[in-house]
Image: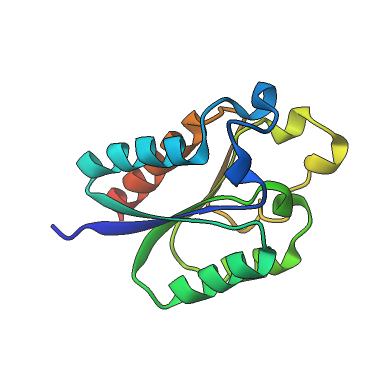
Length: 149
């Protein structure tokens, strides 16, 4: 059985996890979350590729780059771009694979401007408020979707 590739994309400021507002985002670093997720992927037969950028254009370029690759699914934590980026929405709409939008905090329990996701109507699903467990939930969801198709 061939290994399926999953792209994990993290947006602005997520490189500061573990330092930035741990009461909201938790104490784990992004590297720790990625390592844990990579271990979970092995028995699922999934290979993960990780990408993080604080620059919207770099994230768009990454999505364009993977458009022609054989990607089985995407896990994306778009961070603040969730609420502002039509360009990110348009780029993700190009993809035909499952896309799971995740947020460490519950964006619907925070400031009003965070309640609107520019991506919600084009992603396969959204996970919000479960901290770093949201990444694991997203990986399990994508694994199930791949196995059912």
